[in-house]
Image 1 (cartoon, rainbow, N blue to C red):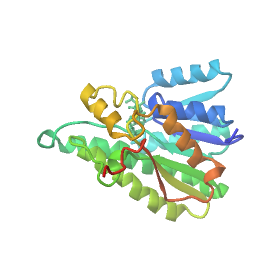
Image 2 (cartoon, helix red, strand yellow):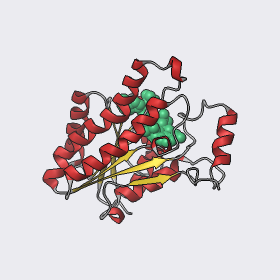
Image 3 (cartoon, rainbow, N blue to C red):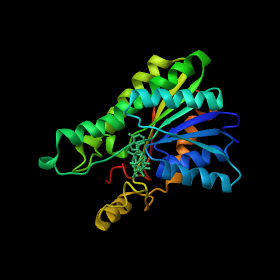
Amino acid sequence: MRLKDKTALITGAGRGIGAATALLFAEEGARVGILDLRPEGMDKVAATAQQKGLAIKAFRGDVTQKDQVARVLEEFIAAFGRIDILVNNAGIVIPRPFFEKTAEDWEKTLAVNVIGIFLCAQAAARYMLPQKSGKIVNISSIRGIDHCGREGVMDYSASKTAVIGLTKTMAKELAPYVNVNTVAPGHTKTEMTAPLPEEVKRNMIEGAYLKRMAEPEDIAKAILFMASNDADFITGQVLLVDGGFSLKRT
Ligand code: NAP
């Protein structure tokens, strides 16, 4: 029960890594709210929680819309009284080769993956700072780390590198009360990676020293660590969870 009596809001949690994180947090004793664009996925997550004797509350909203984010935070506080943990997990990728990539692809990707994080963090910090405590975990990607960008997703890679920069800045601005950290997942089995060609997936498995893709639960465990009291003296850092993919072959 590492999150006993904590309250947590997780964005983009209607499926994938966010859904796994919401269920793990609830199992660890947190009172959990999930935010997503559509209700269908969130209903499934809430029903799965209910089957396990847990409760997860759904909040519909778009992380790119400041008024919707503010409304969700108000509803969250009305339901739970305070916000201890924010996981900025919502993210999108629009794969397209360099010469087909458009400014609109960039704008959409940066709006969700970067500005969405900022808007949710700003709204949550308005409650966390007066509480004098809080944990914010931002989800980057192996594709935002050093030499690990991938062809066709330059806007995604740039957005995920930006997450690391904004995490470090927020860690400074919200200290000493709010810890802000990044978890950077490696290749993970979700709907985001499902459409990739089999050959690409094989390379992802071969390239990882641990010889598999991550399950969403592998990433959820790292997010749990960063959100828990075990990470009380960690801020502004990146935890890369990639099965050794980023290790250089020598
Ligand atoms: P996913 O399965 O595609 O789920 C993402 C969720 O975010 C979806 O439910 C999506 O809703 C929601 N979402 C998208 N835009 C949103 C918005 N504007 N407001 C609120 N919710 C929104 O993705 P995932 O694989 O679990 O990835 C979760 C995070 O990990 C992302 O930040 C991703 O970039 C990162 N990541 C993933 C991998 C991987 O291999 N899967 C690797 C590294 C990093 P809709 O279904 O309605 O679009």
